[in-house]
Image (cartoon, rainbow, N blue to C red; front, side, top):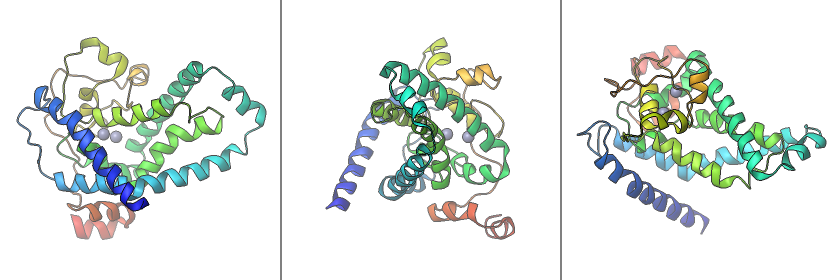
Length: 263
Ligand SMILES: [Zn+2]
Ligand SMILES: [Zn+2]
């Protein structure tokens, strides 16, 4: 029964996101003429299925276990101080804390070889749309979701009460990958926009825009970039596997073996 419910939820999520994003990609395309079934669409669909049917639950289970373990180490005075704040104030704290952590955590993914090994799976896509957002190695997801949520949870913030915000954050992460460019002008400096993340997916690994909602941290730390056109091409200058399972396994293999198979 639980398996049937999971299948149903996955199908509904796919339908919901297709209905939200496909019309936007048609009416306000960042790259006009890009087809829905562009190259590697099926591989990204496998990433979508993998995330919903398998990895998502596993990652959440792992993180909540770790989270509770860490939380027990923090003195009660600290956790009750944060959990006693009004919800609106907790929200500001959580946004500031997670934006700061995700910014530096993401920047490290681009400069530390071991982290890039997993993060490059996400950057290997040569076509951006809402589905491409799901191309992410499960260990990369653990790193990112852990960084966003565990510190706030450990300090005592009531993340359950902020579940709406957490869900919004997830949808926004998909939106910034969509093939959409809205004429919102300077507002993008406040709330972020797909074009910023599209530049993050430029072939230059150090292109910038590491934040995933407000680009405030990029502006503060000098990595904000937003030319008025789309990047020429997306992707990375490394050969990567062309199948879902290849993409999952490749980062786990020693370099000399994966070079033999994929280069
Ligand atoms: Zn990145
Ligand atoms: Zn991305």
